[in-house]
Image 1 (cartoon, rainbow, N blue to C red):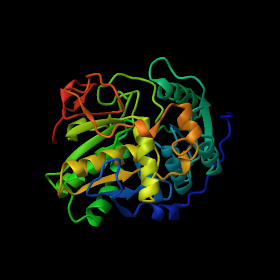
Image 2 (image 1 turned 90 degrees about the vertical axis):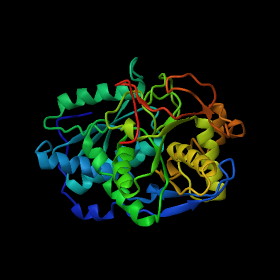
Image 3 (image 1 turned 90 degrees about the horizontal axis):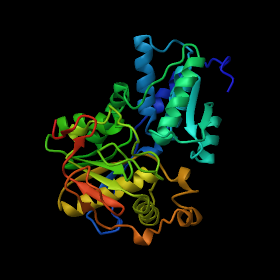
Image 4 (image 1 turned 180 degrees about the horizontal axis):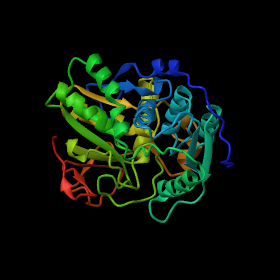
Length: 361
């Protein structure tokens, strides 16, 4: 990439009026067991995607503190979804955006990011420590040294990421009469931390369930190669508020694929890996707690995943047979306990970087 010249952008702040106000859908199809139904906030309908909320919050915060100067470039690591949000925020606020992805990033997502004006740099080898995330961060730091005045939002540790989801919490509080259980996917930790506090102030007895990916280290499991993108992590983001979760579930790719396809066939609304993971757990929660009001957030729609989640050749190549997907979680006694299969659950939540149990705030 030529770093000497990044064209300036004229801000288009009228775009900011398009953020949020996404619909709420009632999900009743069996996933795979029958359940009374749960609510799903369809963030895939948002202009710029769910993470436009966080992206705008991070850039506005940096502008206000003088860390991001007018027209200065923004550089960030992404597996795709935040990249779309940053491309939106860059256009709205007048900042060229440089994104560091990896060669696992779908060709359709690469084209989409570039079509929205983002510069895309790809790494082709996972790091020995930190996997693809580690490799992207190494490349990111190299770019920061070659782009004078560039700003790195650092989505994993930036509290403005979390603050950006206050609007999502406010919308849920308005759209729902009551809420007993909230199910959240966890990657950077931004949206779960950002909505948990406001919603618990609204409904103090709210129970919060985290959904992670098998092979992710966020809640103490050993690192392993991860096929799913958008949830899970090979590092320990500081934005993850371990203390607010009452339990954690780890979902595998076969379970996510089965759920996404069932959603598409039976409820029309669906999405990708994170959507499949949270929907399966939300259906389980609704069935396990009769009479409870359960809600979750579907972070995106299905279009990015037509060549993976919804492609039979892809699932066959990766040995993902939806017919063999786990229909119930296996309970494990501690987050560090090894488990077999594609779905595990633990009611003890710990912060592996601090070594202390989580709990209600």
